[in-house]
Image (spheres, helix red, strand yellow):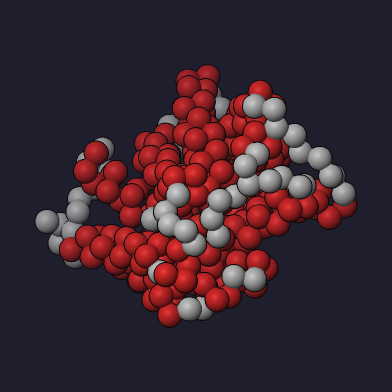
Length: 314
């Protein structure tokens, strides 16, 4: 398929919708699959070193797969420019090391349902970073309204009596929120770096670098990942493919379409995370309870409003 044929195919609305939904399903499935992976590899909630090592294995493999997929699509092996290695290292430290170190620790100490909703706050944090810190965008009524609705949903899921489960824990919900903040910062970094380097190249190499750092950190903390069986190994491979395939698909859609046309489907990420957590982890009482349902609606409405933002800047 030529580049023109690929562009004609990937700009069709039904194709964009289908592939974007595949990305959301993949990303949403990561929440319950990581918790299942903890069980399959016998990684306890208090074994931070083993959790970090598990994350390191996943993202090292994800980096390799992303580079292979990207190289195939670009018909050349993706190697960063000499001036881009600093960006790769900085992005890897923030997007992979810091974000997923906090994410894996937090997910081991809270539910998949709460994690998927709290993690959705990265959309609003990224907007606030871009508007108030780097000032690359301007606030408007839609963005503010979306942020308010989204954070209301995050607060509600944590104040829900049936799902609060002992209160807000720094090692659980707090770590997940910290992971969302790291993602928000990395989003601003990617926006700046992608104008100087191929986005797939940046993603693949920062996954690989960040994954290796996590492996070293996990081993240094005495972590171990044992119990490699066909089932557990397949799950690890799947989690690696989640990152490699989803980022490659999403990046390809962004290459040929306006950002708003693609990013509007991001509101489905928490929906998929909550529903799949309920299905695979047995968290249906929290996912489908009144407060959990309202919280999910608020988050989804907030993300939708932000992505459809078209009102005049304040």
